[in-house]
Length: 301
Image 1 (cartoon, rainbow, N blue to C red):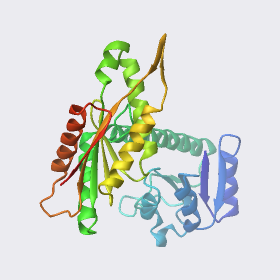
Image 2: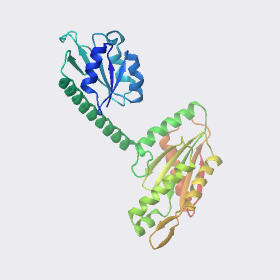
Image 3: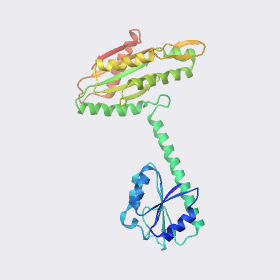
């Protein structure tokens, strides 16, 4: 573990190095609290041992600011002091304090405890990120789920309205997905969805809002795009999936067919709603399916 040591007394620094030095820890001596910031910001170190009596921590308010430098990586601050501090003068923002002179074993025990606490905090942060990601993204395709897509696309619509830009919604659905699922099983069906998702991602702009609406149905928001240009995006996706070989055992490669519906708005009014545009694009997609599938139907709203 990399430990920042804010200690300007060579004798005290030597005692810390003697107690904690070795293969397990890397000690990084610093002379001011500001020197600690880059290490914390980069995540290179998230443990600080500092002399409360002689360092600039008393005047810099660094301990309070340190928590906000890199919120994703908690920092642990262990202070050393000659004084027996009571509750009235206890430094604000520290995690632990040890009185000098200390025994090497006592300092080692404090550091070991801090390491366990940091490990637990990191595990909790990872678990939190995973839960948040699961609440937003679809596990199979990596696209936003319906709830997240509605939230994001509402923001896209509002931004386009304020900028007086057009907007288009594309709904896409695999025509023969049920047949593929029933014939070859859900594992093959999941593979088809992943290949289809990859094709949507490749043929769309990096910043386009894409969501898995339901089952094999996806919706894309194209801000600043209308009519024929939106149609070209849908055509690229359909052509891409048509030209992709999806192998199945003892069978010819799957022939995946896709229908698309587009709802385009040239001028967005204050009454235009995301739900309405999504539904219009889905209705256009249904009309493409009714006309034989594997094609695109464009509607101007």
